[in-house]
Length: 166
Image 1 (tube, rainbow, N blue to C red):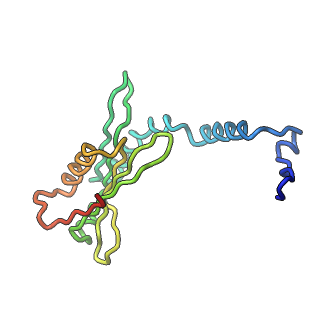
Image 2: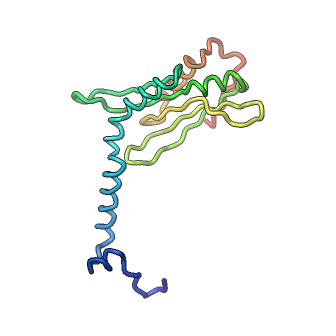
Image 3: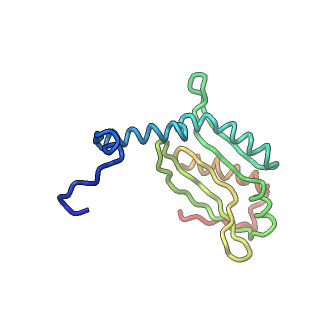
C-alpha cells in the first residue's frame, strides 16, 4: 500500500456497504474469541476438572492447586504439576543436577512460571516439574522447592547440585 492511498475495502464494506472503525472490529473479535474459546474465568473454573482427569490418567502424577475461598467460590493462587513420566525419566537417565528458573507470564491474569530442569546424559535439558503462581517471592520458591523435595523423595541433598540465576 502506498502512503496516502486508502486501504482496500473490507469484506464487510463489500457485502454491506459499511466500514466499521478499528475499535469496533477489535471488540467484535475479542467477543468472538470468548465465545469460541471461553473466557479466562470459565477456563479457570475447568482447571480443577482438568487436573483431576490428568491425575486419573497418569498415576503417580503430583498436582497441587492452592486456592483461597472468596465467599463460596475458590480463587486460584498456585498450581504445581510434576508428571509421573518426568519423575521416572529424571531418576532413570538424569544427573543429580537441577536447574531452577522463573519467568513472567503476561496475560489477563499475570503471574510467574517457575520450573525445575534436569540434565540428562547428553547434557540436554529434561523438564522435571513446574508451577504457575501469583508472584515470585521467597514464600513461593520455598513452597515450590518443598513440593519438589517431596516428589523426588530427597532425604539428603548431598550429591545433588542445584543451579539458579539468582
